[in-house]
Length: 207
Image (tube, rainbow, N blue to C red; front, side, top):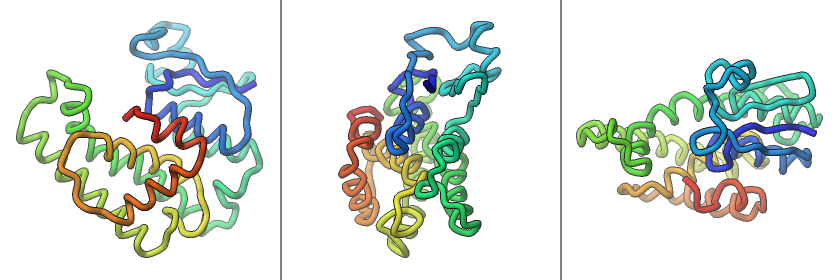
């Protein structure tokens, strides 16, 4: 049985839970992180020296970094639907996964911490405004990608790129900010809502 260490409210934990359900992999989820078991203990740090969730424990194998975990799970399940074998198609999926983890995440971080988490350390109005503008600029990039191909991020087929970006779209949609009109993104969001695992782990009232 796979063990997934991390609280269900974490966006990165939800990527892994959603992936497991799409792949039909049984798992045991354990609550770790703020409000639950601490991640700065020696026992947890031995699993992930970054003291962050999620952590996957598969027998004697331990893995951290949510997008890497999702890739591992697809390989473990020998599932080429979510992560194709053909080099160009696989690279396209991984490109958008990496874009989500680096470019998109860095864009929304300050605004999300201010507007949703109400962090006292993130209350500079100019920084909030800049983060919102950058976040929306990146969402326009996703809009153009969906307009060019679709109905999913990498074309006709649902892949791991949609798992990680679907959760990012949910975060954007639920954050109280001025949202530009992005019809392709909105249609994509509704399309993902047809998947039961997304309703449980993505569009579930948690940003």
